[in-house]
Image (tube, each protein chain N blue to C red):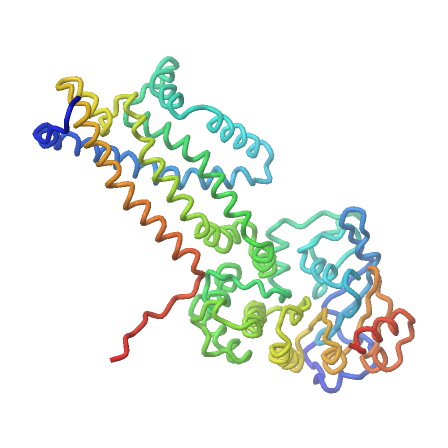
Length: 273
Length: 229
């Protein structure tokens, strides 16, 4: 885990999770009422891997991400994060839910960035970044502020620490949201269509931040409609449809020569825009 | 027909002003108590513990379904029969607080429910527990939303304290009743009382309107405009 290869070496390599898995998902099922949203998902994401999830809307991509940090509760299956069983303990073959506190502890290890940013509007940018480190991780305020300034510099917003979210553009808000998630020093990051609500000219600045993050070896799961991002940054691309993983492969093969007809159909509709 | 008697007004101004101060004091005490109590009622009403939710529901509906006047009389005159004897001020404070908290808890609830789900998601995704997220993320935003509504309720409260005259709190209406029983100068005395109420509640209403403007303005701290020389 310590001798992590550089990102460049990984990109384009065979999707064999030879390294230690960071996120392991087995047989995940989720219903919304009568709708069977996830119909048995098995997926393993290795340390430092960038897994991009593509697929039509309603295919369960976002729900999958939300299940990983328990914003949605899957009925069946299990999720391990860094080897630890998340959300449920297996005791004598039966599952028992973690306490709320334990669930919060797991969530604190996995950063999440949302489509609509969800910054806290009553706090400044700095307030947004230090809120959870101070009140969840019990980090001293001075230390949290110092780390926050580093992260703001990393996302190119060093001068915005005292601004309120609504004073920022959408792209800036989303970069703050990424910095806010990073402030928890997460083991992995989940990105849920983070550029979908942005004006086209603001998409690039957010993708650049994500690309840098991938370059630093962050484990990432990225639900996205940005096919170029998936192609260039993804170490693996997953195509989901109707609650199932239809196909997973390297970006080169998914975009170059998809095996499944459904993948081909989907890619034709999104790439011919 | 009586005419406004300035001498009577001046002569009774002192006692009436003392009554007004009692009215204001009563209002302020009930504001503070009900602001806090109503918040707990609102949170109790949203608890995952069902019996607590039911209890809150029964309380809120019982209060909203009966007149405040009856509630005041009940606390002051009926409770002594089961051994709870309260002085008039305490009885007034308790009845008003119970009454206003029922309404204000609904205001808080509406404010809390107005906060977008994304805020809960974001707080949860950062590892915040429910109570922490409520205290640090949801409530500060919800309270800001409901400040003008709370303000309007408190202006109503200021005037509703007049009902406390029935439990013989020496507030301004009760004071006027006593004075009028002696000199029969109803027109003068009650006009002065009316002017006194108005001279407090009108500025208060303007202040609430001002709060309404600044709370709807968003979280931007407007830079102070500097005049160019």
